[in-house]
Length: 198
Length: 198
Image (cartoon, rainbow over all chains, first blue to last red):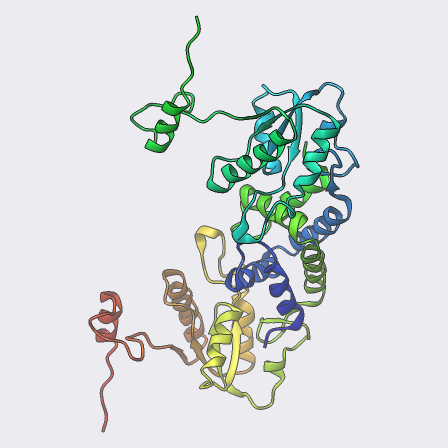
């Protein structure tokens, strides 16, 4: 009853994260019924991206070149290396316009339950890079359980290799009110209080 | 900072229904990071489907042939035509194994707010088909506001063309208990009660 090419498309759409059989079917019907141009366009974009996009050999971010524009820029300070989980985190950091150092993108976080360990994240590449070009490492992984565990693991590894390691600060957001912040954040802000030097 | 091929892929993924900028980004990262084979496979499936799948000239369902297997089958009863909204509805109906007639798939429903009127649904094709091959029309659109409106509109059109039109029954589900059914369904089941003839 279902044409084989349609069945194949529904099956292929399931490689997208968060797409189950029902939404794959809905997507396939939508594309064939209302947006065939969009479907062809998507097919070409997928092919182009999978063939041209690799990982930057220095920061591990997605890049079409061997070394990405950011790593190749002479304006960046090679004395600090900010470690983030995902490319989107790097973009957020860049939007602050307060950091001019280099980056390393883990492309994930330690997550033993999902089978992602130190080997899958290629942490050895990060260690080697820091050993070849000594610098301060700023751990900017998320403040989730997994992000924290990743930061802790990296800190242990890097400190034993004699590298200066820091973690971005945890506390109340700018404009944050004590009344509205969750108690975990407030507790951390108390623990990690800083002396005021005038 | 984002390679252009990656940006193009994120943009292209947004043609999928229910996919906004954030999930498009997540999908693109996932494909490039963990499932490049899946991405290429999807690209090929999209191209194949858009080039080979058309609408059956009789029932309007998706088909790789000019006339789909179901419409071409000599075993089906041409005396009844069941009108459904989507191909998935046709499949559900076939699973009941109690209907041996023909189908017409609207590929949608009347939905003025989304700009889908009688013209967009090509209802004239359905009317012409019934006029050329007179039969009983069974309206099996959903019992939603839009599905009901579509059925009502079609019934008016078809009856003025002298066609016998019926609507599938509304009532308690098989195995349904009065205590658990919603009051709207129960009210309809009361209104549409049938005389018991022994």
